[in-house]
Amino acid sequence: MQHISDFIELIKTKVSEPNSDRQKQLDELADVIAEDLKTRGQSTVKFICTHNSRRSQAAEFLLDVLARHYNLAIVALSAGTEATRFNQSMISALNFYGFEFIEYGLARNPLVIYSMEGQDLYYYSKAYTDKFMSDDREIIVTVCNDAAENCPIIPGTYKRLHLGYKDPKESDNTAHEAETYQAKVLEIGTEMNYLCNKLLSYT
Image (cartoon, rainbow, N blue to C red):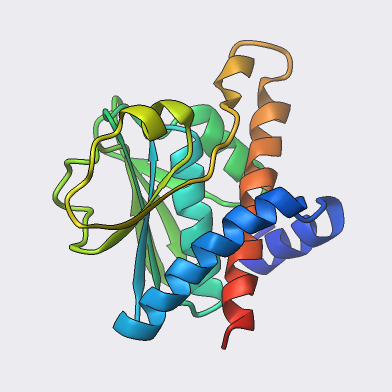
């Protein structure tokens, strides 16, 4: 699949909507973003996980491209309590759904580049203290329990919420690895698409 619209159509036909409890969490996030959009004209959402490698990277990327597709003024970012690299299995899972990347730079933590409508979008693993990818008013969303419990107050935090995802890392080096990561992309993609459509319903 070459376009984000193909991915959206896939999750609409292949994946169930988030359950009611999950929708409440996503609706709370949507309300905070909507208020930000109303008062500032844009909103910065930063996903936090321990290593900024799998779940937080996928959430950043999928919210980024979906928000751009829907013309929502959302700046999607991610960070960790420590920096590692954008996990190769997660990149491969995104590749599976038609998202093609170029990797540039140091092998231990390369820039992962995706081109959308002629614009290059850059992703890499970083700590929450990274000054380059930051804003003075951020909605912090922790996506793993460790980050929720151990990540300190981040300067510029406007609101902090938790949206936990099970770590696909447990499938590494097993026969189910590719399938597990692909399912995680669909799960996160479905929820980021729900979030974007909830925001569109407010306009």
